[in-house]
Amino acid sequence: MHSRRRRPKSENAAHSLHSIGVNPQLPLPNLVNRVRCEYKRDVTLIPNGNNSMNASLPKLDDLDRAILKTLMADARTPYAEMAKQFDVSPATIHVRIEKMKSADIIEGTEVIVNTKKLGYDVCCFIGINLNAARDYHSALEKLNALDEVVEAYYTTGAYNIFVKLMCKSIEELQFVLIDKLQAIDEVQSTETLISLQNPINRNVNP
Image (cartoon, rainbow, N blue to C red):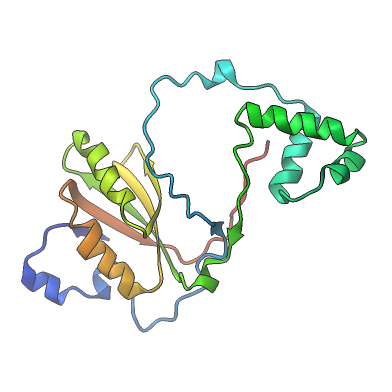
């Protein structure tokens, strides 16, 4: 379903939920049950042209990976518990974790919240086409100012930017689309994909 940024006022007045492919009479499912508590507001993603990761990736051994898997499952796991599980000293666990922090493998810890409990019932993804490639940085700055935008990606393919939105209702989503996102001058067109389920949500395997 495609929607355009600029609409005649008569069309905007008639714009309804059907314009984004949603039947307002249908109950909303439990769309998302986990999201990072800060909603991943680090959306100022700048393409990195000097990426030489393959040459500079830190080397991890089996113990490092086992520690990572444990912390990814529960970041509150005590060092003593991991030491007992892996048959090493707590000091060894501490040293390994500090090493991975220094290498920016471990960047911090987060709280995962149930967004539905906070009233955020609608999760959607929006593909954005810009008027020109040079509009990327200014468009991204304006997207970052929208609280509803929780993630943004600079992509190849059909869209210049792909964003994730969290809203409390379809009505709020409609308002954000028409009055906020499509009002950005740099945005040429958008396509909205509403999430019905989030059946897979996991970390990478270290």
